Length: 129
Image 1 (cartoon, one colour):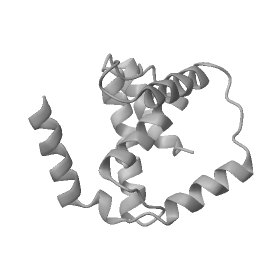
Image 2 (cartoon, one colour; image 1 turned 180 degrees about the vertical axis):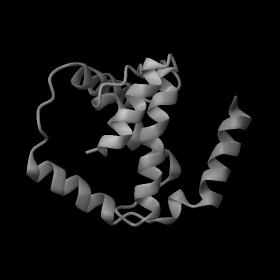
Image 3 (cartoon, helix red, strand yellow; image 1 turned 90 degrees about the vertical axis):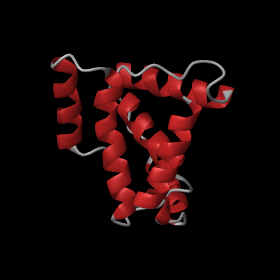
């Protein structure tokens, strides 16, 4: 569950006319901070970013799913599902599912949100653009 301040900041960004991806950046930043402070881990910087984007979509940020060819079909379907869930009335995630996903993430490394890991990721993405 995203923190209330993050949701408010993202909604404020949208009201100011900023793009949905900018507003979603608040959630990504929050997720990176969670990994850094040891709340849970992530297998890679990409996973931490994906978790943040998913939370943004579920919180109601109108961030469209990635275009075909950019990611796998499963990722696009998941993003579309998250977007639909965020635009409708929110139903609470079951406690069992929430605990299971949290337990799985706790086993992942924390180094994936280090400055070096994020720098390497940013350089790879910039090179592909």
